[in-house]
Amino acid sequence: MELVNKTRLVGGYTTSTDKTGREWLVVVAKGTYGIPDHPGHAPRLLEQQAPLIMADVFPGEPSESAALYENDFALHKPRCDVLLNGHCHAPNGELATEVNVALKVGTLVKAFKVIGARIYEDSALSHSISKPVPFTTMPITYAQAFGGVDRTHADPAKHKWYPWNPVGAGFYPAANSAQTNGLPLPNTEELERPVTAPHEHYKPMAFGPIGRAWRQRIQWAGTYDQAWLDHQFPFLPEDFDLRYFQCAPEDQQIDYPRGGEEVALLNLSDKGRSAFRLPANLKLAVLVVFHDDSTREAAAVVDTVILEPDANRLTLTWRASSPLGRNIKEVAKVIVGQTADQFEQAKANEERMRGKQHFKSLAQLIAWTKEAYPPAEEEI
Image (cartoon, rainbow, N blue to C red; front, side, top):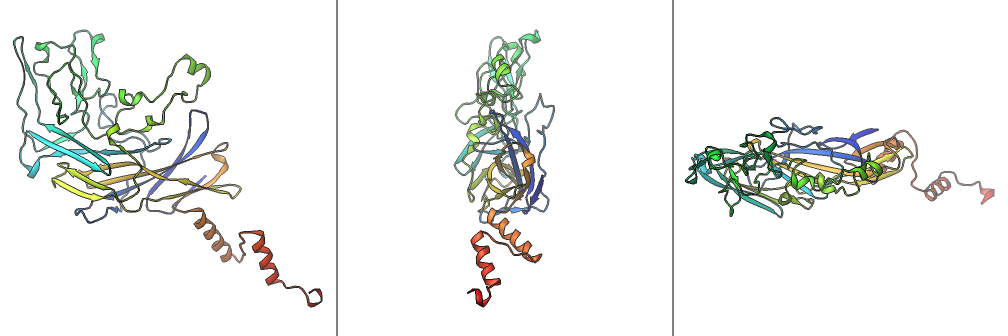
């Protein structure tokens, strides 16, 4: 199968199988834009485009860190993931102990507090938290959010991990006061619910992808039991939900953007406040051309938005998933950036260049034949 890309985007494809065993052609296109400096300016495609990601990318060991990027070839996302990789920047670059950050994309508005490094100062008689260490920049990842693994118990079998964020800090349910003394608290927390106790549960606050095995995501993966092995394997379980492919937290998922949505950032770059809009036209045609010359237009939607303010970079990912009759061998080529009408017109133009006449219908052929080869007078 040939992939023809008529755009400046990076394109690719794969096949995937759904829970019914049906095979799908998944076409992905990705555009990397510069974040404009002024609110009235539109993002522009960069000369250097980011490649498609074939495997999840982690900043450290996969078991000990959250992904920076997930691979680009999910079967389908029911909504659009909005993600941000970056830092909190204290206003005017001056030292601060607390800074509020906020992200807005279309209908999405999310804000939380970023706090300097703190530790528990506990003893048998008292429980307290140290004063935050002032900072000018602070990474915003799940390593700075509430969660982690409690390893305070002497028996490793009794270590506990926080299922909503096992790579964070601040979760010490098995620790006594002497054991929590000196242990770190998270650097991010909800605006209205500060982290104050090592035994409580708090919402992890970050803007990046949720781990595939974390509680808030694994709930959509389905049931892998003996019944699945007996009746459904090797396909996905019958109760698999496509929401599993959403890697953004639920409060960072929006309807597919149509173009022109407002984006606003607070203390997420050295500019302090910044605002712009997504590109005005997000329509992208994807055409599947079969070996029998039939065509099918696949609906491509933007289902992943990644903001990286520190790099002045915005990435948009389009996805079109098209069911296959049998397998990918029935497809001759996929064209990114061309509709069926444009394809037919291009084919007609090509045939004219070769000296061939192209007809859209039998009636058009008959009419052309009568005009080109009129009958002899005796036959009229």
